[in-house]
Each structure stands twice: as C-alpha cells, then as structure tokens.
Image (cartoon, rainbow, N blue to C red):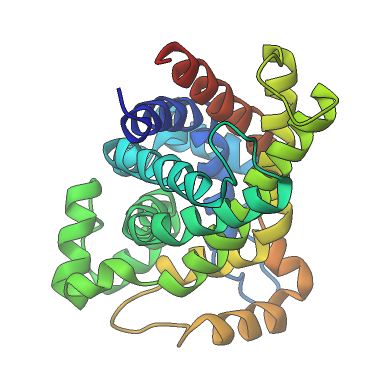
Length: 296
C-alpha cells in the first residue's frame, strides 16, 4: 500500500475521531460566535457556554449538540484525507533523505501547505455546518422576513446556491485560509516539537499512547490559540445574510466586531473551542498514528 493511500486512510479515521469527540463543543462555539448583538438594554441570547448548552438541550434535546454534523461527516473522509496526504507529500519533498525525520521548522512548512489545500474543501463544509449550528439565531431573522429555515445540509446548500450561486458556498474563503494555513502550520509543528521533547530526540517512533495523546492535545490547543479571532470572523461572515449582508468582508467584520464588543468580541466561544481542542485533536492524532502504524 503506497504512502498516499496510507495517509488517506489514516487521515480519514483521524478525522472521524475528531468529529465524534469534538462536534458538541464546536456547536456551542458557533452559537456563541454568531449570536446577534442584543438591543440596547437587553441581555444577549446566551449568557455563556454553559447557558448555551442548557438552552440547546432544552429546545432541541441532546441531538441539538450534534446539529450540522451531517455536512462535516459527509466530507470528513475527503477533508482529513486531503489534509494528511498533502502533509505527507510535503514531508516527502522536504525530507533530505528517505527515513530521516523532519525538523520542527519543516513540519511547520508541511502543515501550512496542507492548510492551503484543505481550505478549499473546508470552506463550503464549514459554511453549511455553521449555518445549521447557528439556526436558532437565523430562525428569528427568517421568521421576521417570512423565509423558511433550511432543514439539513442539502437544503442549506440549495438555499445558498439559489441566493448566491455556486460561488456562495465559498463565502468566507479568505478567513478560512487565514485559519487553516497558519493554524495547521502551528498544529503540526507543535505536535512534532512535543513528540520530540517527550521522546528526548528526533526518533519518536516508540512513543506511547499517553505521550501521543499529550502531544495531540497540545497541538490542538496551539491551533486555536494562534487563529481564534480569524475563526470568529469566518463564522460571522458565513452565517451572514446573502441578500442583505451585515459585513462587506473580513476587515469590515473585524471593525464591526471591535466596535460592538471590543477585543473580547473576537474571542466569543473561545472557552468551548479550547475545551474541544485538547480531546478532539488528541483523538485525531492518536487515531491517525494507530491506523498509519497498522497499515505498515
């Protein structure tokens, strides 16, 4: 079995593990990021992450925490297979000779290259997911305008294409790349640095599962710490109305978020994102390593 196929298979398994573990946290993150600014004298819809969980379960049951999972689940194989296989090919290009481990700097470069490729698949997937996750907020605006709220991933895609054409599925591509490229550079670089530190050298092939979990968790946390404000901008743009948009672009979104909420507005939902990052990314890397090792 070739290295590309191994990376495709292991990346798919890793992505599925990430989604199963992390999606409820991601749902709460998007709800907090996309909730509309309250009217003067009014309280925000959600007082915080715990309140968002309570309201979601009260209104939709536990299944509400997995809303929007269909879109990433349908493409998780393609996304993570692409991410890990491109990273694997970047490693092959950067490696000085066969079998030699990459330096941390080289892992940063490989991760950035993988992030560029993954952005084009992540953007439409994230857009559909975010619009479903933020449906409780969108439903209020839709009810006021008499527009029906989409009922699932395919319905969301149809609504988007109807309103903005196929290019509408790539709304938010710039901030998506602004998240995926530096985020994956940092994630893969930190993962390799943590593994080398725990292994006491460049050879990390004998690391135990506990060390892999720790390295994966640190890598996930580093991803979100490095790009979280960009993710907020991406989310608000992707759930924005197509016909009467509130934001004209990424910079306009940043200006309006800062004007309304200050710097803390760029960190809405940060708690759930960080709570998700450690277990979800630990699951991703461990599942990837186990599968890759099993494939030889």
